[in-house]
Image (cartoon, rainbow, N blue to C red; front, side, top):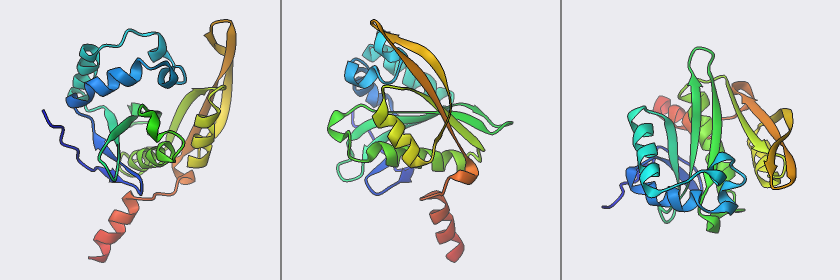
Length: 195
């Protein structure tokens, strides 16, 4: 079965595409790789199978959850996923999450660009006001990425993540709509207005 990738939001290096059941095997592979999942959280100590990932993706599609596959723009390779969870359209808030599962694409700017594309979607298409996230204090690469995308640290839950005999803080960060500069959505709108 061939997966059809649809370009929802397009950056310079990657684009966001709606998730597909065809990606369940990739998700299972990534979520069983401790290098990928220890920085994410619960996935590191959860039993992950292709079947439960297929069920998860199916539920997400059925419930219109705002989850995207992150795809390399040159090769159409699916390299990760990004998401807005707990979307509250009354208070205009959501939680952000991202995983670059394909390690060949680590440290090359894909995470930061996918983060900005997802924020663009959240702020300019869902009209959210505030998007927050949580990460772990040892995940310095992610914290740097989030700061570069515009997130600010808003607090910590001390020693809330325990791995073996090591304790780490959970770092909470957020970004407000007025702190974010659209890179793609408003450009498309401007092009529409000019035509």
